Image (tube, rainbow, N blue to C red; front, side, top):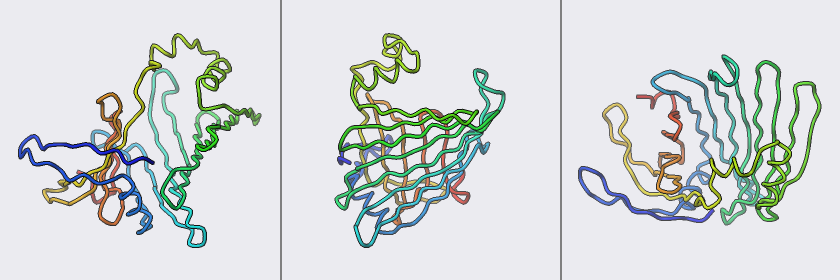
Length: 233
């Protein structure tokens, strides 16, 4: 993962936050190997939970970041109530360069269906499987380029022209940055490392981590906040 640096000023004090590399924050997580158990909530209502667990193989130096969780929500275009669970792993080499991403998402109502993907970043290939409620499994491989995207859209019956109106082809890729910051919880100031994911000037994700490498708070673009029980506002 490339360390992308940005500068930020507090709206009140105008003091610059100290920049750090994303690799430094990742190293902190793997050095400590402390899990993060988070609740997912919005407007003080709990919708699910998530666990993040870094691990280092002492023999090979390979680092894995495991994640899993559940979420319940209602949507007028789906079912009145839906429960989703997910699990996955990001694998890093000893230099903290991401090598492989594996993840799966299961929709539990009315019958279990699951989509899983294994993405090899070196070969730029993705293997995707879809398990249908009747037990049938569909599998295929896709290249991480325009040809692979066209193949996937064709199989899903999507019009590429319509998709591009939602996700423009010229859209800039997300950038990741990290900096020292402060988080206020229950009136107390806590020094943190803040990792930010942005795209075209819009913040997609903002994560505060402790000096032990644990996630203290994460805020998402879609309105969900993740935090441990004792860190909830």
